[in-house]
Amino acid sequence: MKLLAFRLAFRVHYGQRPSRLARGRETDNVYLKTRLGLGDFRVRAYEAVDKYVAVVHLTWAYVQWRLMRESSSQIQNPADIIRQHRDEHAIDWLTGACQEVLATDKLEAVLARFLRLNA
Image (cartoon, rainbow, N blue to C red; front, side):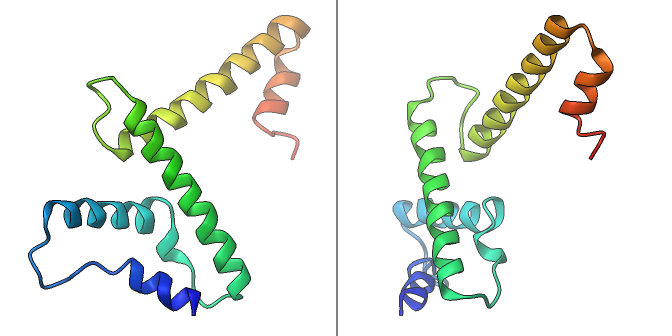
């Protein structure tokens, strides 16, 4: 029953001219389905789908929250927030690797660890 309600909740009024609010929901639906992978699940156990949906909605809420708090003129839409978030992770990763090289003076070992070359 929850899955049916979920599917109905994400249907956009196709065939009708969407209002401004509906257009916003339609954009949200596209991001939820394509960028966050909500449209990818097939027939799986209900519990797994339910947990996945919860994680996707939590992720989307985080993206929307970051978008509301952003004051930069370069950040215009959720895709910009996702890109910025990925860039922040890349900066943290690279900074950590550089700090470890400076602390240990073992470039090859750090590269193997951070690039998972031994795995």
